[in-house]
Length: 321
Image 1 (cartoon, rainbow, N blue to C red):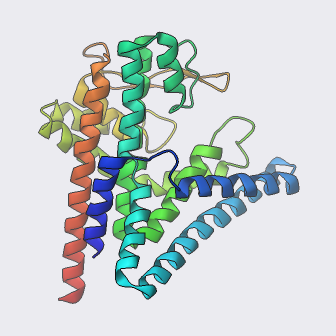
Image 2 (image 1 turned 180 degrees about the vertical axis):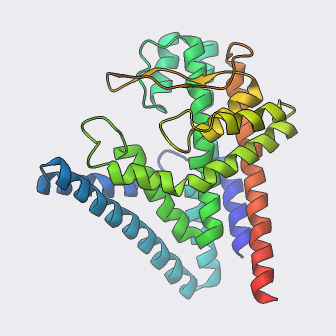
């Protein structure tokens, strides 16, 4: 029933998204990160020991998450196969974030179209780490496009990839890796030492999914009748135009598909960060590019689901044949 669980969970995410008051493993993972971070900071005062403590924190959070997920799923299956199926669907559903990403991006888009500049800046601040207080409309649209492109990997392609490799427990462990990076994987003074391991392990985890996103988003660009050739070319050309070894792959591919330029300097936690530009500015970025990027995200996500399902079928046939 594995593939049925995958498709059921994907459809639930498509229809329901992430209702704010429903129980969600990421909130529990976040609480565990906060607890272990406080303990590490109490015990480790110097930069060198904070790095070691951050590594211990990573092992505790990721190991606990994957272990609990495996145990819960094994227990549910032992009680009854259909209970196991329900737990597996629930786990996978909570791992996927396409609808949540869509809702968040459209909230900013709607604020730009029908609200005030202050409102759009505020809604953008909910989904990005940069300072949004002085951003102009074009910069806001650019930030949303970048966020959707980057999180197409984190929120959909990578979880599905780890589902293929190790089922729901490994995909849940990946979500812990990703949550650690989003909470402590920063380069400024407060998190540089304690978050070093979390940031680097997130880079490792997303290495293959990010490169798959280049191909999947290129295919999505072709299906959406955007510029697939330019998406493919710029996705590879500008793949290194980011401090992360992974983020530029989807961002450059989307920039090429739309014919816009992403990246550039931004302010984070009061510090100016000069980032290289990604893509070529064939035209100015527009608010409509948010919807175009979301379309690319949904098509690429669907292609990822189908691709990994076919690989799963092929592997199952190989091992049983």
